[in-house]
Amino acid sequence: MENLSPEALMQVAAYFQALSEPTRLQILNLLRREEKSVGELAAATGYSAANVSRHLALMAQHGLLARQSRGTSVYYRIADPAIYELCNLVCDNLARRFDSTSAQRAAFAPAARRRGATR
Image 1: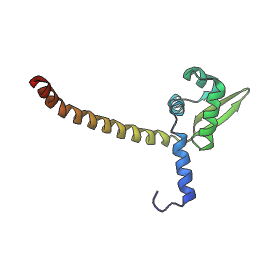
Image 2: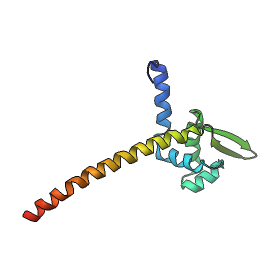
Image 3: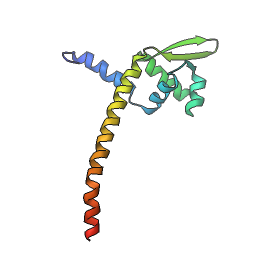
Image 4: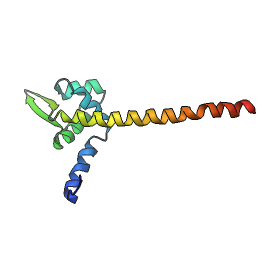
């Protein structure tokens, strides 16, 4: 992101904002292996077709998804599979952070037990 213009930074922020909603991440996971229609995605998520359509439109606007009309249905697929590399990078980073936090908490557990035993 070094030396990006303010306009470019706004576009980067909008891209990340498109990924900042759990429902959209769930939809991305559902599209990981194969394209799906709005109805299929609505059934899989438990959300209304209108709600899913709004999420799909936003992700398509940011280049995450591609769409294709077939008869009366619209099918969505991942436009750039590299999105999963980005998501995996974030998930791995979070997992390391949580592992570290868990290990740090565990290091204090013996001291807490000792204090409790002396009371």
